[in-house]
Image (cartoon, rainbow, N blue to C red; front, side, top):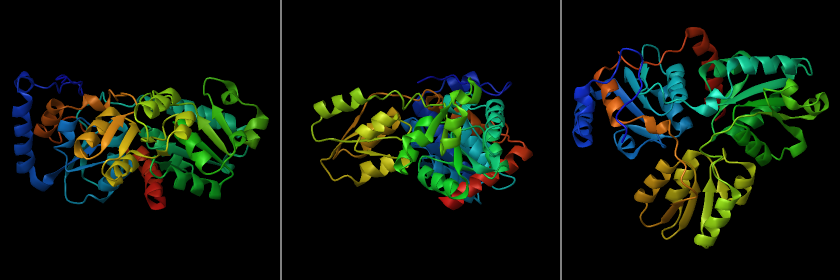
Length: 364
């Protein structure tokens, strides 16, 4: 286990903490957690290390944890073990006077960073030269920065997770002729496919090229405009991995995350959010063979929790940013509750982003 973590300047973990064994620090966290009682709620995403998940009050995918943050009324502090955009979403949604802490600010999300506010605003301006911007609904995946969420809220748009992307895109197309979806092209494309939107009505927007690399005719024809972004954890999987899994495990069922490429999703037996994958494994009958294409920490935990089933990874794909949260930075965050690693979102961004997040929760 890596014991070092990057923190807000001035808040390095003391050596006395780093010298503790994992067993000792786990005991310390449990004791601290008990003494704090209802003052704190510990949330953990499904992709977290097993020792972190074991300590959490709640575990779930982005949608589940967003709901918990929005509904939490007792705790004064929320400690979010996940990547940074998740903690930002909790800070946007949680009640006033509640602080959200994130054990390691360096645990970001490369996918979220692929759609910067400057690039998105530039693209929106270019799009406005071709079509009426009031006919375009901005929708961002929750795997995005707070200012992109605010961008959507300002323009009547919405946020989605992989759990509710289909419902949100359906809502968007009921209200406007086009959807501009960012930052994950693959979730957007797989969702559009599931809604029966033709390939010729989907275009890819490359922010490094004029008009995203499209012609005016292509933009006019498009119903879904997909930002050129991807999750490196899920684009690691290939159709060859699927074929190999079927050879090695005859009769297996293959389930993948919709951040995978279109080819992988089409070659799998099922696809869905992290929460969907968890339920898929839980609901499968004893003796089932399931091969899963998502982050390896979740797959390993599902295999441990369901010994009556054969659960395997499609390939080993680790999210290094999720892995940055560890016992040591979690313990130090809880020791200095409300003093270190506090997530701050400016009031103007929070106001507009909350509109888009609340709309998502209402649609979901």
